[in-house]
Length: 145
Image (tube, rainbow, N blue to C red; front, side, top):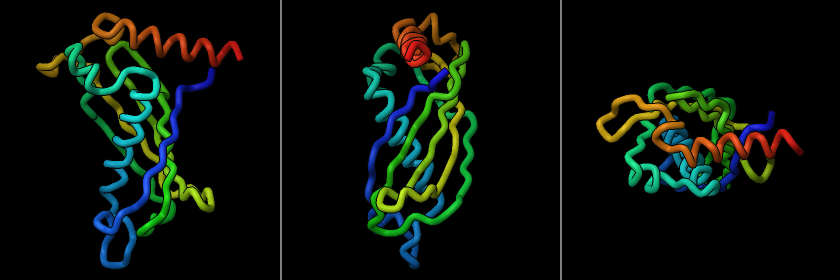
């Protein structure tokens, strides 16, 4: 079964680097969020819609493997992939590549709880049935191809 994924581009600005013009390690987590936000927007369910419907996706676990450094002015390609959707959790994986050479720089993941606005765990199918169906339909469509 093919997973839902989306690619977005981002250019490294000087403020995201250290004195050696190498990207500071914590910025990759910020860029994971860029990838995740754009993925959700692309499938028609941006974060502001989730929040309006009272659904939150707080990060409960994250990880990052640094392979090669990104540098000032690199154009990066961030790929966000929805790897797993369970009753009350979503796992998204990421890959960041240097666009010019396609070198893989970083891989990572975030695990999200599905909660209400008071951060109480809830079932995705119950609180966001359209999003849940969208995930299932997208995966079913990919399976049919």
